[in-house]
Length: 573
Image 1 (cartoon, one colour):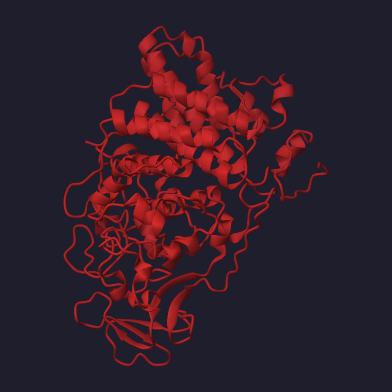
Image 2 (cartoon, rainbow, N blue to C red; image 1 turned 45 degrees about the vertical axis):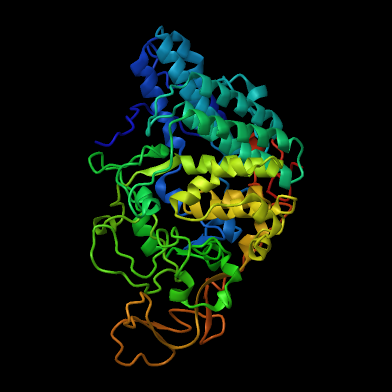
């Protein structure tokens, strides 16, 4: 039976920043009467899990790898100080309120465990804030309404905040239980988060010219290595399509998934990822598809005429994860028997099948497959990338990280010397800011990360930390077609797709009108050009951070400074 988060039946405190930090639900709970036992600590800390992304938000986050009908504020350049909504602090107040009152519990073991939960979630909360805004005010206490010097203080430097995050994570690692648990944070979840946070910070600092990048890269590598050497987690490898099965399973595969957001028909908590893929016309981009190697480990870009291969030829003989992630010839939906041909429903023609389960889940909010929040493959990728960026990566390091992922996919090993001696020119084009003695292997690790973690909420933030924002402005290209006519998209010998410009005649399959249903770069031939009327720009001096809300700057009397490049309606500098 699936596990579920217990619901915390306590009112949430809502409001602007000052209220969020000071308001205590004294009409409902008195700290003197609460925080007395393990059950009460558990119920209070269960509330913290709500800060994790839901499945729809993470799986549907657009970047250069996948798009849909609504690109979102970042891609569309619609962020503004007037509308910024991420400056919320309710969850932090709940966490700090707990930490100020957990001493009342006389059960030392329970207090240690749930204090660890609180430190983990405070670290996670602040990581999201730093990732979004850079400098933010650090609070480790519940603020009284009379504490105006704290309520309206200036932002602390990201250096100070990151130090506190690392301190909280170290406490969590020490306090949390070691028993694996797919629905509650443990020591292993804290180590996984530390590797994620430190890698983000280390690479952000390295590529954005900030100091102390190596310090954080070492922390990332050490946390990941401790996880790898001490935990019992491994990759899920059962069956012939383990990667696909990992993501369309009703219950999280606990040998690999460290923590999951769980869904349940019994609790009426379901998600719509499967529905959204079809109805939002989600499509992988050609840039993403070009990341997949050939099945023999050679670069796809080394194939003669690789850029003008039509769909069936393009997807034949590739990394097996492609057919477990993208609708390819021979695809049969879980629980079904009929092959689903590629009818170009996706904007680019490359339709995701990741997270797609049985047909019963096709409707809006009908899916109850668990959604992985932390999994072992990410920790392996974090370890390899941190070591590569430090310049300390060895072949043995690759063998216990990247090559385990490749083995699961039935792909040849990555060789350190070979990768550095012969970098893929296409990857160099996709990541122009990557240049070092380890360039080749770093590009290969980025390739693996792009493929392995797609639709898990990482890509846009990887682009940000690598300072590759200009890659978001590239055209969204899809499948290539040599001209009008009929196509056999599932390679069964029967044409099932017609591209036409004036008359589809008596064709019985899927028909798409050129210029209306499908736009090709050359008019009647070329690559699908999705969302071609949209122009995306990226300001290198501004867009790697979000704006501070103008309303909060006013409340602070100007103590909160604005992020570089952003303007607002206040009179403060």
